[in-house]
Image (cartoon, rainbow, N blue to C red; front, side):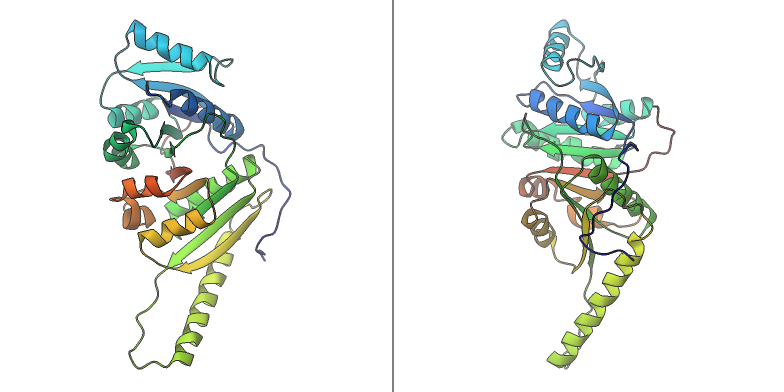
Length: 295
């Protein structure tokens, strides 16, 4: 049976993602986005394809190549694609063409680009992307691996993939801690219920939820992952974000939008700006691809 805060020894050889599109904009944060993307992909074992959405002019290509050469990608000579179009549509289209299983985007919080990114690109990519989407804000050039990861656990099939990814990232990055939480609604109590009975019902409900989460996590390989899990009664958006801030998570893993209503649809779909402003780290929306990913 799983025990909270237990460390398991295991292999870190299995890649989490194999092929990633890194969306690169000619903005002040380009160097930081390239550097952190390179570190993330190197650790996760994914092959990068750099994409700039815009006109392929000599000036634009020269600026991009200079930034790439000065970044961690400099010695790798990754494939560079420059293609005009609407950012979200083009990024999703190229990701599908390249059979990528991850898209990385980024923008600094102080840039005006972030507001456009939140209002348009991120919102559309969250629904159109054929694969997982890693959104980084406030990216620092010297940022390292994700040391504390928060993953929201739900029990439908798409959410299973989110847990697999979170554990894979934590394992490959040797993260300090992975926190797995399951949020559940509290029932509406009768007006005449006494305090003692109410406390008893609370305890019974939390015990049931903890056991359910513990049993669910036995399905996953936890080798090499330091983790803990916790059930929390459902709160409004601010409560969810406060939890991520309180544990100082630098990566939040959330199952992406899907047909059934999930945490993204309930809490974040129409609150992207609040989400980005509230979290200092990165956000990973997970989505399993429907095609075979190239090596």
